[in-house]
Length: 320
Ligand SMILES: NC(=O)c1ccc[n+]([C@@H]2O[C@H](COP(=O)([O-])OP(=O)(O)OC[C@H]3O[C@@H](n4cnc5c(N)ncnc54)[C@H](O)[C@@H]3O)[C@@H](O)[C@H]2O)c1
Picture 1 (tube, rainbow, N blue to C red):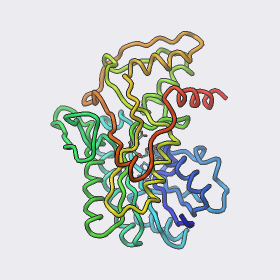
Picture 2 (picture 1 turned 90 degrees about the vertical axis):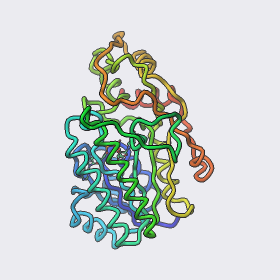
Picture 3 (picture 1 turned 135 degrees about the horizontal axis):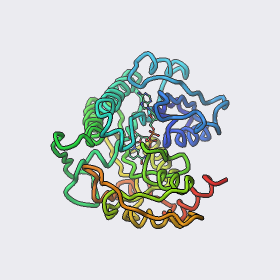
Picture 4 (picture 1 turned 30 degrees about the horizontal axis):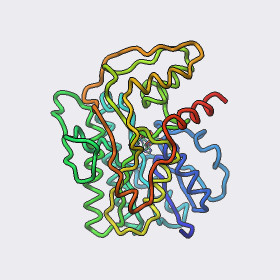
């Protein structure tokens, strides 16, 4: 693909920073927009200072900030829209902000793409399916949400659902849209504090010398996808000439229970960390496994790094 002018929203975050690195190394002009809510400049250390990259601290809901990013590049060819409030604890504690940032950020960036006739890649989530009836999750399955009087976890999944609705609507209006649903990305920059994601938290527990707590009985399962595989999926979805209106599940098909995952990670501990049981989260999915045939067929994508290899790679980076 010839050099493009690319905006990555959420570009200082976990996935966004690795995506920026790859796009910059491919020779594109890249601007990362991030509010630094959970993003960090250090995530971008490898490319800060490159002439084809800049980081803009701003809000994805603010049209002046978005316009400034486009102006900095003298136009816009592709938006990868990743800015969002992510992290399970926030979904319960800050549902209003999750809905505000995730939905309004998506609407503003769709409008920006339309105004510039740019390609639009939306980072959705398997959580857009809510509590699906069957697994693996295939595109076309029903998206089902529980009663919000019980819990507000689906502030996030619901925001991704509406993001997909808005993206599909824009596609019908003629915008070149691709929707990517990553399934549990992991890698060294994954957030490991209380508001982070499970692999980041378990490794942080090991580094802090404390036990690993699984939620509930730990029988809930996930498929975890190495960060470079996820970024490769985003880039392939953004580059492919596949026609508009395409949705891709980007995830490893290797399934593991959280209890078994905790056991694997506990083995990295030199002090013999234990796995203990804690309270479950309301609305936590029992399984989240992707059906990836469209990504295989149209993008020639599938994950390459096994969970064992990825955990070892992550541990090596965290301890050097
Ligand atoms: N990590 C995963 O496994 C996963 C799975 C499914 C979907 N996703 C989606 O992929 C995207 C990236 O996820 P991530 O894991 O890198 O999360 P992340 O939290 O590391 O990245 C999101 C970034 O958005 C930024 N942000 C938040 N509010 C903003 C605002 N108002 N304006 C500008 N920037 C703002 C944050 O500071 C952060 O850097 C998100 O849209 C997320 O919902 C991630």
